Amino acid sequence: MTTPTTPPHPGDDDPEDFSPAGPWTPPGAPAPAEPAPTWPPHPEAPGRPEDPLRASVPGHPHGPGQNVPPQYAYNPPSTPVARRTNRLAIAALVTGLCGLVLIAIGLAIAALVQAGRRGERGKGLAVGGLVASAVWCVAAVVTLAVVAGSLLTVDRDSSGQVTGRDKVLPSGLRAGDCFTGFEEGSMAPITALPCTEPHEGEAIAEVRLPGGEYPGDQKVTEMASDMCDRKMQRFRRSRYATDLEPYSITPTKTSWGAGDRKVICLARYTGPGTLTAPLAKTVDPNMKEWLGLKLGDCLGKWDDDAPAQRVLPCSQPHWIQVYAVLTLPESPYPGAKAAQRKAEAACDKRADKLFTGRRYPDLVSWLFPEKYEWESGVRTVVCLGQSEGKPMTKSLLPR
Picture: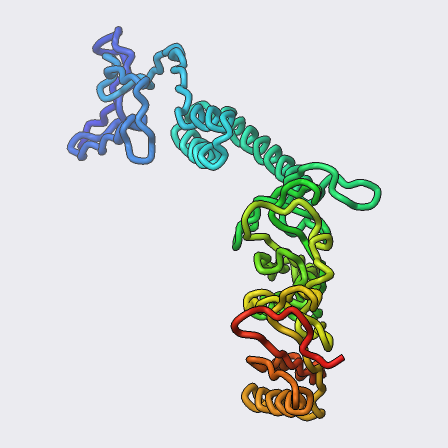
């Protein structure tokens, strides 16, 4: 017979021990497993950030394995650390104010990137450098516009004549304007001035090229040169003709696309001294080109370099006289040698007829058209009688 047992009553053995006992178990039975204590998560447990302010407290003395929940200590906020100013931003502002636009822009962009990455101050300075650079750019554009406008116009009177000395681009000249300071191959500004002042050249004409697509630099130059050479012919009788060089100011590919077809024809004087009058006033009425020579005209010695020869009274000493002006039959251009043979035959035939029984000239020569003249309809031949030893003082022609 088993003796029933009763669980001890709390306080039977130790009235001061009020700690709760575990569950009652019969004698001989295995003791129940003690439940695992529930611990608060450790500050360094995975998934929980380490907190340097977290403090662990030892277990309470009245219960093995029991801990008091962790306590948090109060730590006042630290004093903020001042951020430094980015040096590139300072440099961007300084260079922008000084007008070093490209450098300022590069420094400003680098400063904005660097300051943002480092947490530095100075973004406002970098922006200020960009603003200063923009102001310089606007000022430069305005200045260029004013200068460009002044280089395309000159002061003129009511008749269009230049009244003062003005810097102007060659393309800004008008026909009749005189100039100085022109350099071949350069589009630098020149000085436009009245033709009564010493000058070195004159704009003799304005012509227009045909429209269509841009034909290329070489073709534009060729067309312009041909047109300006024709305009120069009216100054072949100038007393400065041998020292006048033609030039042409042509449109560029860019201006061509904008509709520009204007060519400015220039005549530049390369002789001694300077010009002091318009070229039109230097034309000598006693100078004649070969096509302008007439029967009986007397001349001095022939100047191969001059486009025109001076006509003299036949009563004055002279070396050459025109004894015939003939016209060849119409035909396609036969070539230079064939054209010369035709002219020689015609002049010899006329000389044989004219000088039979009279003094024959020491030399007989002839002038005949070149290919471009022949193709334009010129068939004229001028026959010349020339003295070799001494000048003549009377006409070769019979009265």
